[in-house]
Image (cartoon, rainbow, N blue to C red; front, side):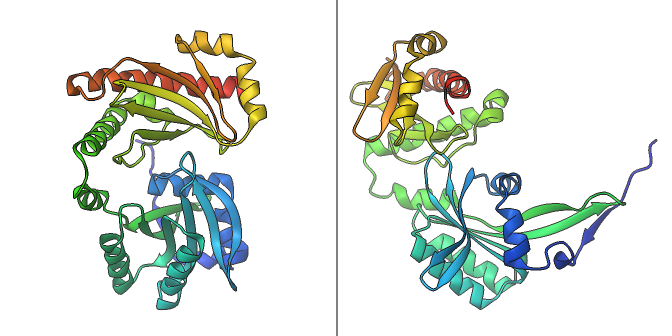
Length: 307
């Protein structure tokens, strides 16, 4: 049997990142390292700005969630948590209108863990606080490896229960539909390789990131017209829309569907739909399979004809 190495934890974080802003924040802002954090909190992050201004202060990292453009702030602390950084976190979240707040620390003190837990319990379903500890590990003489450990995160189940109160029957159906879609996604190994699940909500749409801030996939259900649809939603890029449209025949063939090219004043969409009634629960599995199939094809289209 081959000899196995022993994992050793590097307790002195500043031996790798001597300065929070100049070293750790700069390191975290790099695409491959921000991807590590994305994996830890299960949210696709796109860097907007490092040391982003909030009045006379600066938040370490200002980012957005791919596909939804939810605003994200990240505050780093290579020490134990303290009241000063907790206060800054609230100030920065307010100043940026952030919906996802991430606090990365060396060690989370119990009182601050409880504070983040309390904030998650007493804010609405659109706001989420994450408290993570950053660790460094090494095996023998190997390179040091970072690891993010979640200490506190939003309790989506409890927040969903709060939002259910007062919802109409139609909105409750939408919430149940997308919750089922998340389950279908988690049980599909191929789909999980391409996409990250979103939190289910009582909306008629569900967004999926395809690796670009310029466009994303938008899945839709229409209870009135009794159909479902899948779009590529292009936020504000007419040239990109024209680039896709120049390949409209190939795209229609790939999707095996009639394609509706919708150009508005700002946003543009590439749309397909099918007559599956989302109000009929016995057809939900069929809906999910259609969504999964078309979303993967859309990603192939984006890679082939997008930018």
